[in-house]
Image (cartoon, rainbow, N blue to C red; front, side, top):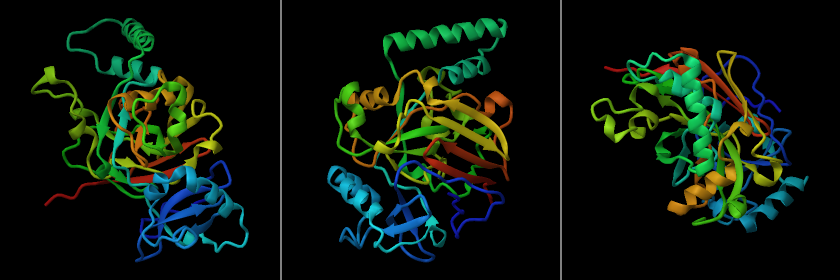
Length: 341
């Protein structure tokens, strides 16, 4: 399946593999100059506008997720119904698949990635050999796993943009970086759920690229208060999302998916979710112990090794990122520098 960028976006050269697993996926689309609508997308690039068959002109993907247990069988039937009205996907613009109320983001959840960051962010005056500092980071990761302490913080829905939209790099961002992540999409209100039952609350999965300005992650003026995620991660468009939500029952094992991010055609991240310290179920359960997760909310599960800080190459004007996760499709975003007066 090859998905073209949205008509409203700047065309990019080269093929884009948007294939996904299962008989259908959910998307939010729009025709030129038309309103966004929830759609069922089939693997052969056909689209069913869900407003008519589900009898709701104000329908959104989030409203579908609010009634997910009842809606899912109807979507399966529509996907199998050859008489349903279909249109070519190429006629539509592809938006972020859902507008969440809450975004839960996971930090330090890929073992090799955290070790790389630990080495890159060495303290002033720390002249120990790299091997020693890597061993120290590995010990910290082992302790975190034993103590069962995931790290979750909150992101802003306003940072979300479409999977083929341009990403504007703010003028103040000195070290903008990429972070490809698997995102779980919540399908039922979840509060205080166990690890064993957590995946029952996941409607599906999608792709997120959780951009980060490395220069503003830590507060230099007040180091004792730690990280500044508002500044470093929540600029408009810093979370390209989608293109699809693939239902959970079509994803064989979310803890064994391959994530690949290419920058201008060169592979930067290529890792399996097997490298996660805490798996998807643990991350969903952990977030639900403090907050109530709502239908349409996102739980981002962390990013693997291979970010720009590791390579010594941060994002700049004109860069193109291609990101894919096994069975979930692919996104392509171009970076543009902010134009300031």
